[in-house]
Length: 226
Ligand SMILES: N[C@@H](CCC(=O)N[C@@H](CS)C(=O)NCC(=O)O)C(=O)O
Figure 1 (spheres, rainbow, N blue to C red):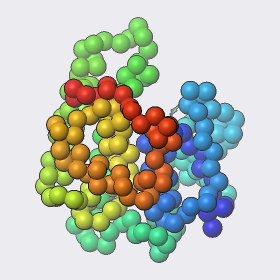
Figure 2 (cartoon, protein in one colour):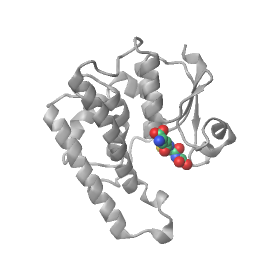
Figure 3 (cartoon, protein in one colour):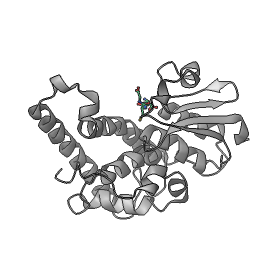
Figure 4 (cartoon, rainbow, N blue to C red):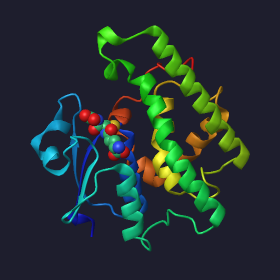
């Protein structure tokens, strides 16, 4: 089944990782895949642009159907392979509502992270200001406190929408893993630390772990003081 699927992806990209986790969870191993390099600008290659005019990764194709946005691809996979692999949308009304809520808050969370760790990538040299980066860091800290509180409220050993792994985790876990990769302290954020420790051992997540993180397990310390 998965042989008619193709994923063009980049290592360490949270949106790409989301789709890879969803594919694993739905037992869709064996899809065609191509690891592209952002450094070499391969996400702007004709091969990508033909499928994704934004020139972004992930770029995902199933048969003749193209679904590039990571949220869309995750919803699509869950909907098309509902009874295959793990169910990613809980039936419980409360958990389902929380899953949707956290998934979409996950987009804000990811954006706030990017404004700090990729500040220099996004902002041209002449337009950078220490005060702007400080403000971005403060916004990220405020955001982190929210997620600490969400997890604290759910209790220990929990996923983001309750006891079962759901699309909320598929979407948000790669952001959390990136925070730790960039040096965030698990002592300062113990609930996020426990969540990370719990899910990093999950088979779908281990199987899709960014290869360059495996090659070089030591990350950066950009977020050590956050
Ligand atoms: N909204 C898209 C975002 C995809 C995205 O921003 N991908 C990044 C890599 S993490 C990318 O390709 N950036 C290159 C660019 O935008 O030119 C999704 O969720 O799939």
